[in-house]
Amino acid sequence: MGGFSSKNFSGVHLIHFTQFYENKLYVYVPEHDHLYSFNIFQKGRKFRFFAQESISTNKGGIYLVGGQTLSAEDEDANLDPMSLGNHLKITNFVAKINLNKHENYSIDIDRLKPCRWLPDPRTAHLLVYSEPYIFVIGGYYEQNISTKSCLRFHTKKRVWEQICDIGFNTVMTEPSGLAVNNEYIYVFETAIQSNLPRVHKYSIQNDIWSEIIFQNKNKDLKIPPTLCCSVFHIADKELLILSGMRMDSQNPHEEKGFYYIFNIETEQITDYKDDKIIDYWRKDRQGDVDYRKMQSVFARGGDGVVRELNKTKMTWTLNELSFEEIRSETNNCCARGK
Image (cartoon, rainbow, N blue to C red; front, side):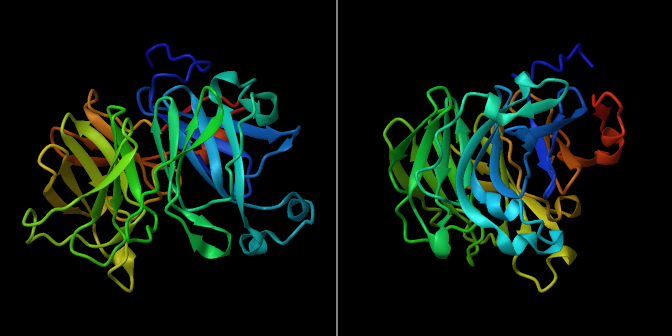
């Protein structure tokens, strides 16, 4: 296990899971094959996870940034759990869960340094981590109003700053993306009805958006539209894109998943491949998706599932994590993935 300290979650990849209406936060650390369970509180009460947007960092933090949640009044109203989804409201709530500050695997977010909330409630936005910033790209306001507005949050100063709107003639639905070398952000718009995704590129230093035009590159390639894709940095010039939920079938679960490589130097898609093991998973919310120095890429699948890609063989293995086993741990410590 490499002498991993349960009080130091910095410098590792954090794959996190939550379950609706519970206060449990599950965190899998692939470098040490550990699954941890944390109890999250707010003002001494159980903090409930609903549909908050979240992202992890390589500093041991997991940030909640907007999304959807219940109002305090509805939480206290003892609503039927089966109907809670109908009462969710878009929120501008922002908080940091600092795993390094846990006390016997419990964390009260109100005992940590507070974060300024989003200027306006927002949901279904893209979160991208590029130290020391978390970028918020697009999404929806209340009344289902789409926005091209983009912001960045300074994780040390805990303040928000407006940046250039993404500004293209598009309404992005569940976009995916990542930062490369703290210089550029690549955003993949994969849910559009087109043979190829739209790829937007943002210069962090110059605060400018541009769109990558494929033109004749990949002209014969047809990539199915999907929701909730995931993007990883796997080599100096290569990004790995994993499919999400297929949108081109009446029964998307019967369709195979797929992956492809995007070369950031040639701006060309290569190595497209169908692969059943990638068939529909939840959006991966890792902020640190730089796997260039590792032999494998680890990605969140469905609830309690982590998929591992051997970069040399380009083969996948499935790692099902046992939430029930970790719940039964009397000292609430770690359990190995199964």
